[in-house]
Length: 235
Image (cartoon, rainbow, N blue to C red):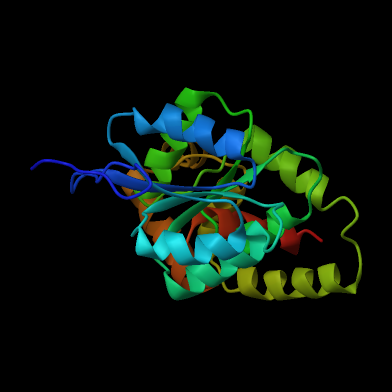
């Protein structure tokens, strides 16, 4: 099967390619990401957008699988665009981009169902790994960066809204068995299934089963949301 290109010059991907959209208000960032990722095996950049409003148009039209979404943009920010895109296209995977400047919208983006987040200075190899990981259905949840980011963005989040979230999260976690709570705590620490299995002296298939039950019982879709619930429950 031959590949062509769209009017903007993006290659038409083969069926097994990950279709990637890049949303950032900085043209240089979009160009750099497009050049770097466009030549990566298994990934094809199918669309670019300079703000959230444009993303709502071009991402569905391009049938993107994964979106790299900046947060702070003019016209429409990445947070509201993420929420609307996921509401209309639940299978879409969105990775939030951040400069790690204690931006409280990052945690809100994860609560909307974003597949994870990356710092804008993430090394190319790590960026490619993240795209492939979320495309396979697994969110990006780096143990060290996740802990630092959640701590930073929630540092001043101590009002009644936070208390309400804490109570709601505690009620959700109360329905878990002791073993399921242990697994949830491992997920919140950013551990992989294999690491949780080793930590709890369980088999990996058993951990996978528990993780699946967590998704069902907690009404979430990915490990990031499990981690946020555990964090919220701690108040």
